[in-house]
Image (cartoon, rainbow over all chains, first blue to last red):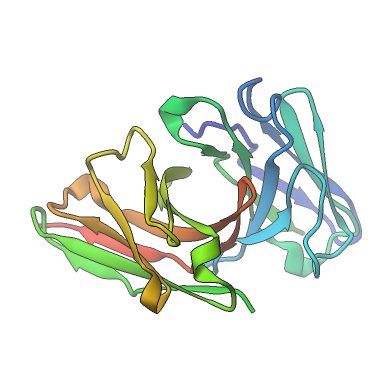
Length: 113
Length: 117
């Protein structure tokens, strides 16, 4: 069981929007604005898509957006494209010393139908 | 372009030692922390520890303290993760990642370690 909770899978059709949730606690997501989201295609390195809850690195499409409410962060992908099909996982800084300084979600497989 | 390139897959027997590497390029290697992350088969990601190559300051997550050693050679922009005596439960994919601010931004491609008799 991963420290941050994500749905195992989500799906959508091209052009649609989907949202992936990531739930933690007040010691991580709820307590800090250090939530990030990563995209990982099979056999490839994870790629940073969102950092500090809602910021996009240079070069990442504005179809990707992030938000947070309480202990839950969300990644929204609008105008789904076939190349968006990948695994997505969230991450948060944590003050819980027993797990180190970074927590991850279990990952969500996005299928573009 | 920032890149982290990891060493190739390894197959080892229980009790053997192993050292895998992560070479950084395209940025000042000594100015960013490098973290190591484990992903066991079918499981989520776990933060193992982190090193600052500039002065080799190293911090381990409690679960990994004493189980692995993280090091860095700044002269060749490379960080290492090593085991002195592997166990079957060390079978996993291992990633290195550069930390920017509080979060990992660039990741290596991963090194698959298989420990089997």
